[in-house]
Length: 295
Image (cartoon, rainbow, N blue to C red; front, side, top):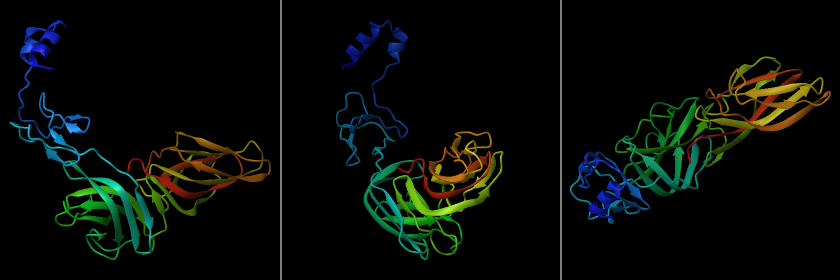
């Protein structure tokens, strides 16, 4: 639509002359601003060749401005992260979008990496010596080479020289210089079943740490509630906090035990769930967890 037609249309809608005078279709100097129209970047009024998201190049009609950055649309598909051995994990994905410190992203494809805790830097441990902690798994990129990285940090790994792009893809527990088995597809992780908290008998909400079985970056956990009650009116409860947020419960059977699979409410405190029982006793087995937004 031409400028004159825009003015005519706005005038018909009782737009004031002052407002009309403020319109300016001249391409100025934006500050790293991107406008998208379908699969093109719309950088100037009337431009139909502002850049292709696939090639990452600005079109020839984009002139007169500086600071224009063409951002590829984020794409994360086919992520699988898994235990390989006591010292290695495997990371595969069809596509992953990694980001630099300015939150500018680039899409990587056909990722097939192995991270080794005994190595240092690229495809190994970012800094320090191996410890009994959760190690967070990263995919990193230096503009040419795609690699992996293990770090005790879930937010700010120590990046190898030249590597400026990164993406968080999961975590692995290393309790005794030996990775714990796990298998992750997308945001969902399976681990060997672990009893947590011992026998639960408290009748008011109390916190239960899951730090040894799920990472602090997990938003939910899953497993089995094993409950034994002295009567059919006994209940076992799980919640996200001491006030019963997101409460789920299992009703016991008469003079017997019951085992019920569960998915927890979203955890209000990292690696922590709240539990209580109205009668009898119970215990939890944790066999998985979920991340909120990896893919």
